[in-house]
Amino acid sequence: MTDHGHCPACNADMNGGSIWQTMLEQSNGDEAEADRKAEMYGATRTSGRWGRKIGLYDMGRDATMAYQCPDCRFVWMRESFND
Picture (cartoon, rainbow, N blue to C red):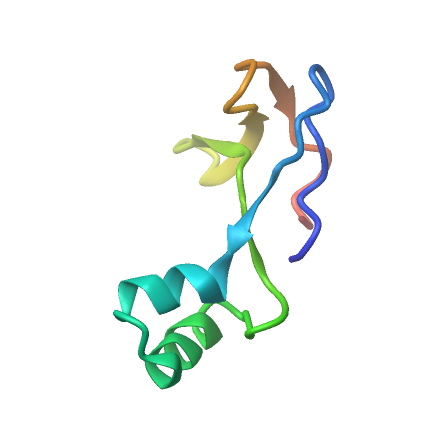
């Protein structure tokens, strides 16, 4: 997923940083290793971003039922289970 949307309350961007860039940093600049690790997340050098929204998990239903904004802490219900 590339576009994680915005918080419905404060309109904060829920897109985080590049997954590939994170893997590159964790791999001490080894681009081949960053490629390998990013691929595990479905990301490439040019696509794939972390999501900033916090998933609120319901163990009884075994599903993410709502999300929380890391900026304003607003909670909103998940629209469907097909996200």
